[in-house]
Length: 449
Image (cartoon, rainbow, N blue to C red; front, side, top):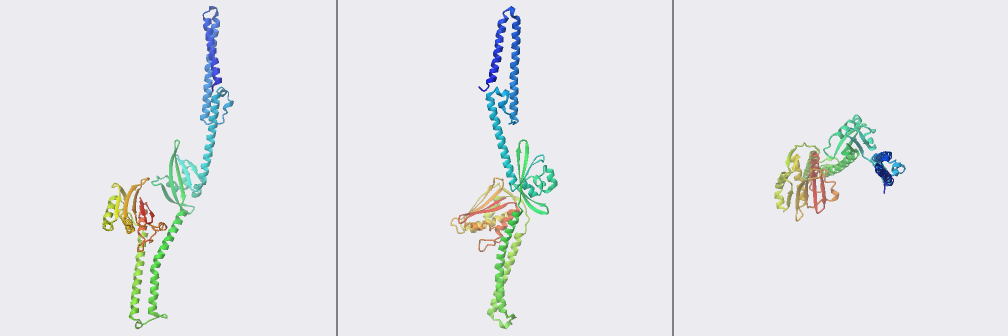
């Protein structure tokens, strides 16, 4: 039904060939009709050749139309084409395909424009380049951060920013990397991320980066403010009684700026002076000890890396606290694969775990069913994770962001250095320590290496 004209043309031509064939058959039995037979045979030959030519021409033009579709030539109007008039069904189908291709092309252009607009407005630098070093994308934020005009090839970027070029071409061992660049006499901190995707036969490298100098400055300032508050608190706790007691002693031995003579002092005053000087000495010693502790956490120790099994380290700590856990009926359990190994400073890791477990033991003292558990597992990004969990008093939400500050402690007799040292140890191992807590239910410290 869709090939009406073509079908009619073919049928007519075939019928003519058949009729001529019948005429030839009729004349072949009559001797006086030899010329008519030859003429009819000639007509059959001509009609057959014309039929073949017609079909070949049709096939050729159909193939041409299909090639136009393959090349996405949506400007073709199939309704006006002579050959397409012979195929009403194909005419409609090709026009529908043509319309769909136009819609797809318009939608793709709109999506491309939409994505390009997002990339141009994104507050993150993005550079994309193929394996031949041709830059496919260099968005405005990348130009702004790097103080560099758009480049066409990575070799140009290497000439302008050799350190940045070197950093983005190095294999990334982690999800992101931080580098420092000196641009226009300004030192900036960049965090880099790298992704590779295949588009057709090309491998595209996508580099995204941000200038985090402002955030780092803000965090550093905030940390210094918190540290200064703690230092101020600790120092004032020592200096206030020293100052007040010194005034009391001076009143004892001076009157109107004149030092009293020994016979003007009685035994009671001398005893008070001795007591006050003893207190001053103790407070002074406490202040010196505090400064020594501060020096110990501010210095960066050297790591002695060895490969060891985590389970064996935890077993030693269990034995270390065995008497205390048994005396207080504390359930101490560990769930650690014996094959888990860690490349780290074993002494530091052990000391850190001892401090964290000591905190857990103190937290569960008032719980009638005290429980402490240590577990180890592999994260989805193939990192070793150790969790120390207890069902103790917990940590108030308002304190969670302060517990890692040096000298800050929620305990009356706490030094406030255990958790800050733990964070420093994890930082030295390029890891992290985090905490989650629900007051009066549980607390978990998570170490990720």
